[in-house]
Image (cartoon, rainbow, N blue to C red; front, side, top):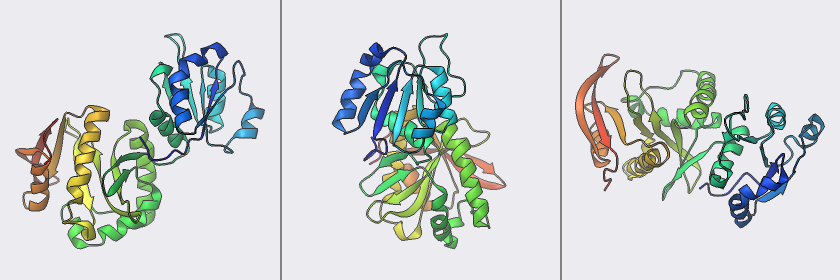
Length: 290
């Protein structure tokens, strides 16, 4: 679960107030974390209500009324639809659930953050935070990639920072929003510095998710890459069921090959990408990372 919540209030806007009992587990959990839960039984959301409340409070609305859900979404207000049965639909609403008894704050916090363009926290290790990338990270990326050694085995950034920022905006919209995974930013918890990138990608022509990582020169040889990659592999297994993961490593990249083997990867075969030779390594789920 995220360390701290941006979400401060949950509003249950239900057609039948008697159905709030389905949210008892969530209400209890919210109370333990100081998050307020308020009921608005039978009240249809109106444009006037949206005009008064839009952007003013850290609220997530949960509703089983499609008209209210559509209006809240149109007003850029965080909303989760409650779909009851086959005939109950919420057209154009990005987040819909069926079983309120199974809701937890971890999920609701992520729904809220997505509406507010706040990056998701993916994992925390002893020294690092792994979170979704933001446009504000771009300057730090250029500092990291400024070392010629950093681009020996990885793709370079765009020559112009505005191009890279545009790419990151599109990546957030098309990758994070759709897949809910991707390549993330690595932050040194003690200082808040961006120290690298790591995560999963889907390479054209391959079936498996691919692990990738880049750690800035100043933070290398400290066990950081092993620390964050171990956390990412656990996250992939737990959240997405990634039982098999691949990595592509150049044969001369001895450090990355050693790291991959320590993470439980084994070379399966040699492949060529853009005229360059790579080892294709595969990791089976539940491999040890000692």
